[in-house]
Image 1 (cartoon, protein in one colour):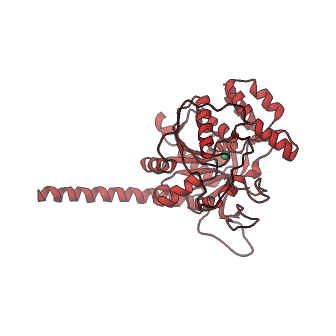
Image 2 (tube, helix red, strand yellow; image 1 turned 60 degrees about the horizontal axis):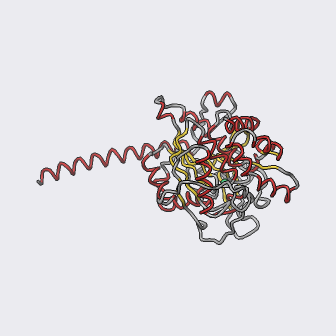
Image 3 (cartoon, rainbow, N blue to C red; image 1 turned 180 degrees about the vertical axis):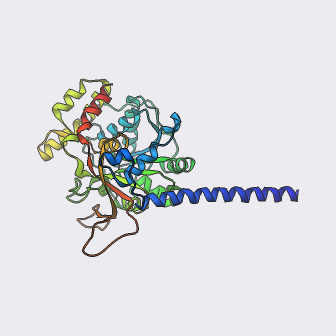
Length: 384
Ligand SMILES: [Ca+2]
């Protein structure tokens, strides 16, 4: 009995040593790529002018040979409104993507409404990806007001939302942690809303979140102006404390800022009307944007709908969409001031007069995209 115990003890020690070695290897690989030391671009990416972290990420995703292993494993974190719906559809229709789960937080609309919108969007797109409800309040407990630019239901108030299935009973944060742990180094997280769920996961198990392969974020004003305030983009402004935890985590993040919302990723009312004729799925999207068109017409005098979350998903999934990126060190402003939600981006390699430098430049900001392909490719995908 004592001998058996001893043998088991030795076995356990060996297993522990192997597991520890594997964890160290994954951590080292992650630290290597996230500190920006490996700047060797993949040949195709370099040819297209892409550099740095994004090129490295693409080289990694191009390696597997087995068809099943080739599929990219995504968790999509969303506060589902109209542009989140477009992003969900782009991923759901991509044969190279396995949506492991969709996690939801309050943001564009209430948590309950956002869950229903996500379920309905996936159902309309023919996806049975599971949906998990998460954060209903901000990361810090700071009071915040839900305000939707997409109509009261976040989807244009067109009576579109009648999902036949429900969210899984498991909490979104539990799902994220369990899934990342079960797929070390393989899961990519696409963040389409305030990153409250991710901040909660980081606060609970930072070591588990170090096993995330890459995060994609629609967030910050990039190097331009904001939409929630002159300096803050909505997703950061809605929960800046959460975004601070997210940005400071050291996870490899690729962000698309509001500064890249040009006319290429903005549908006019006429274009949406034409889109609605293509298919039931296209009509669903066109109707979901009707609230935003009305909001923009009233507030800015232009009858149009921009699609930031859709553009981020295109950047994450479409070959050739990202043309240039800039590795940065982000500083998120959480002071109770006019600057709340601003993200100051220190560029790696830029010689600031103050001489300031940082240990980590994990925040890769997209600075140029092939946005001209967006509407054509999205229209074909929705029509198909
Ligand atoms: Ca969103």
